[in-house]
Image 1: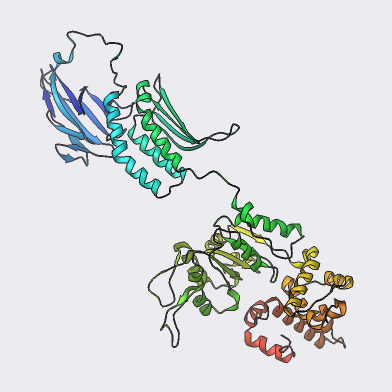
Image 2: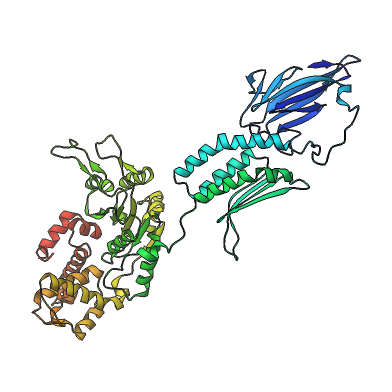
Length: 581
């Protein structure tokens, strides 16, 4: 509580650089800050726009005297407030003679006789030096303080960011923050200039308070970068312009080199042979060339043998990771414990006779990991894969040190993922991580236009391996290929051509009698028509198709048939299919 004669006035005296600012205090609340809307404005870079609050109140007092209470509170300022040398943590009272530090500006609370606050003789202001108003900052001193703050506090960090290769948007935001926090501006906008018919792209925008009656704007354009700063007074716009020019050029240095054609158009790999004529598949590969440029997860669905791994290989070859490893693993071919050791690696000594070896995640570091049949993966393994993808590192089984595993995962499945998610057998969080782009490859029976070209391609390739020349495929054989259902899809067609080439002579044409397309149907039709033989025939057909779809893998075929591997082996033997498989 303060007791002061009625003839005395309390004044805050701020010592800023080479000038002194005086603020008389009467009962009320005052906001101290650098903003033009502050009650007690001190335009210094170490003072926040709303720095502190001072409350002046009256208290009951004896006649002939006035008692005032003064309380000060910091408003979460950037550089803090100190009273009598102590940092202000809570509301504190003030007494005449107290020294206050707002940031680095020293302020003293003084009591002054009322007569000293009135002008006895007034001097008219010259045109070259108009009087300042409470809302108008002291321009010369404020310029020095702002430039010093930008040069000493902000510029080193901006240069370091530039050396680290900051992208122009990030650089613009950093420069914008530096300017907005050091200049007494009302509005600051940084944009990248677009074409004549397009709006400029805003990179940074800051607005403080309301514009004054006669604001002044400093506009700087350097190449594609445009910076607009609005000040309360025209002399500020001209005085700060060199600093704004420098800041604008810093952003310009972070701009990318002149734009070239997208990498997709220049470096997209050639489509797999033979070129597809199916519009759906052609569109899938066109989209894949674009998706490859990002780092999003891809989930490829479709029946077994439709070419999911070929599409995954194309995505890798079209991506920026093309020079890094492409590693593939069939998740359905291994039991859970073996799958985890294949994925994560294993340390020496975990089990008898086990040597240390890296997993597929390690092998694919910086490259692409293709996880085929991911829908067959156990939930506990899914959780471990999710952690690797989130952390970018992997722990080998039995290991204590993490190893780098910054991979892009491409996944594939022939399962119905919606049903797996609904049943809870596939984790939703992992699904969202791997299925940013989901695509379904159509089965071969829905793309008949590709069958002749694929058959010719596989036949010619098989003939080359045997150093054999064949004349081609007969029209009747093409008709037979088109009429077949192809349950094993492209893989079945490839294997059929590899088998047929064994029966061709030099220069011979592939004919219908060289084909065995009825092996999965006609050859299993029972002769007597009995129920027993019909069921036996159906079982033979189901087992043969499962093995064909799984490329002969017994474990995967057993899972597909929902029976044990031992049961599958026994039935194959009983049905005399073991050797044929």
